[in-house]
Figure (cartoon, rainbow, N blue to C red):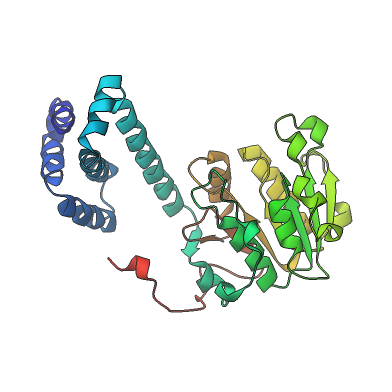
Length: 314
């Protein structure tokens, strides 16, 4: 695999050195990790960094049990499996570059919300069956609302109502409005809309609204919401529509939070990248969550804690 990459590069004289670079990197796992950190810190051209990542992939594949590698070869799936992994890494690299080009500031949740780590929540807010890499995102969504003592909350996208019920659990006097397409108009998710709300002990704190958000009239909710959660249509047009309506409903000092800012949702991160140049945003590090806090400029914001995080130690 290494030699194949090298031959492909050698077809273009300008890439001969790059091919040799990949060969050297592949000779040592420790060297790969070290060089990847250096290249990232130097903001090197993506091609060199891609070769570092490719070398790491090949080393990881080499560490698989021999029987598994032989099985992949026999099935003719080795190149496909490696290609899928490499493509994912390239996508993540492109996503990282997109983030760097935005006006979105990444901080840990504790740095944005002092004391969020001590907030008590029902564990079932997290969904272990979720396909998200980080199924703990919704814990942060609910914890932030609770820490900010939000009383009126609006949610775009109900689904089963797991997060809805979590938001409704934060206080006796909270009111959660959750908007979704009518079940009859949502053939994919219709049968599941709000199923968890029906049996929730907090169901009396929830009002379900059924409408296409594109035609939803926000006038009855204008400037009245402490907290708005956007997690519905993930297309560029859908996120833009829901965001503009979220701002119509947001009260001064309120907060908007978006889910699925991730490579798998280009409509979400594409729109939020553009929005960040009009309204600077935060991203909670190691999550798919981006947020806007009215009256707080992320560029001037001083993190709430200077405590170190072990995962940052190399």
